[in-house]
Image (tube, rainbow, N blue to C red; front, side, top):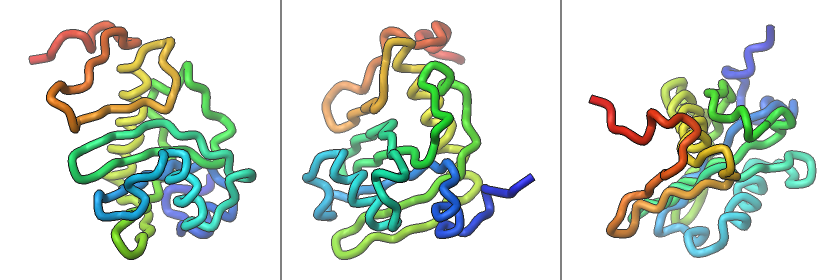
Length: 159
């Protein structure tokens, strides 16, 4: 069995293997003020992958005070929204967009798991009728709410 998790980023992307890309867009970045779709295009350009070939699917936008985090899949032909509330085990590439340049890193095992769990959780929280990209905006006075999750037990806090 092929060890996709440990492939170097260029090898992984050149092999056109399904991967998840987490893009950190800092407030100081010139990308901070452009649309999410333009950020995805810029990240694909940074990763040297074609939009047409990679078929990026924007899944989640997490808006914080000083940072936006966008997560999208590339080369993921097996993505099915109706089953995406189950945790995937995709490799994760981090693109950190700063003021002057972007840094590309393969995610650690812990960060890879955190991203994949977070995406599964967003599918669950946003219900059966929800379609990506999902957005969680933490910049306002009220936290995000999810009135119709796929798993009703998520409506009640756990102790």
